[in-house]
Length: 163
Length: 381
Image (cartoon, rainbow over all chains, first blue to last red):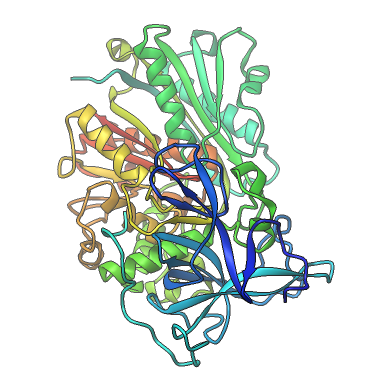
């Protein structure tokens, strides 16, 4: 996977064979952002630095893209297969949106499932492959979950009710 | 108390596909209807504010209505365009610059889901490449989480849509006017889990126009006066979960709907429990339920009982989206917010026909749009 060109530069990198998303961290208030940006959405400061985000977290929420998105902007294959999209709450207080893949695809996901960042090929409309990030269910430290896995009911470390 | 703006005339072009008509033609028809309702002609209008997302520049309407030289401001604020236009008109009149103006919103969209481009929303191309630049995903993800946290069921989502089609049946300007049973709504094609096809509104075409004036002038016009007691608008804060967000903080903050609603209640001195009818953004069924709570009109989780008991029906204690909302009218982005105001004015005048809420004296309107904006208004007789 590391030899495919990435879907975009500065989105993820490899560290000791493990993929990590590249975000930014505010030096003043510690707030994380993804993708990397040059200012802090929370304190408005401009003193931010690139950082690698944690690779594991829990599924905050999800849905399934059941119809082919219009192209452009969608660049995926003409032959469409539904795929899941969700937010994974990573350690450090940031939730990242991504395509969901792995054993639960396309609609076996549950809120609170442990998830891990993976890099997988994304086949573009013109037949070329690029490397894209996604999240897959896992048992923390033990690889991917089996088909019937159901995570705990709530994601840890959450604040108040949804706004 | 009359607020700082009043509605002197209203006009609408029916919503739907409206094949063969441009957005501009619909807007002109709505404007002429509003002018006639107010007993005015175009040269009487001192300023105009117009909104359209996809159907052309609103100020080009002057070529059809007449080249009177008036200042005409164009507004683009996603689904909150109508609210932003009304706010602009309010500010213009409250400043003393002008006394009588026209607010108009119209749109016409292609079939199917919207196809926004990442570069228009401050995002890089990969976000759209991978298939995440899709508004329906956001609504599915948001209501999925909300149902998990607050015990809302799919049956309630279906009841929202069923109510919309029932109300739409009684609204000649609505698009989808055929009632649908709850089971048909639940059984229709899944679009963005847990939301099915008939729980979503569709992009459509339509136009709404309002003649607005200083409150001191409104009794000169033929229609019963309706006052805009408050208008507010907010963008998102850190911690609000919004469409087109590659990331967000895990800890939630206030939503723009919550803050815009509170600002409107504070300005009007009228709040939850005092409205005879409310219109909230119902891009899909879940949005109506979540926005009711975000606007403080019910507790989080109370929507399940509201829907089971018919509390939001016309005739219930808190009628919601009495004209069928976006679900029955479709969504022409530039027109939707003003449609809510049009409906509220009709109801407060007692002119809503088959769907009249008896004795309606106060109403609330709420729009929400990408990339996390909301505008609210409070109206009264």
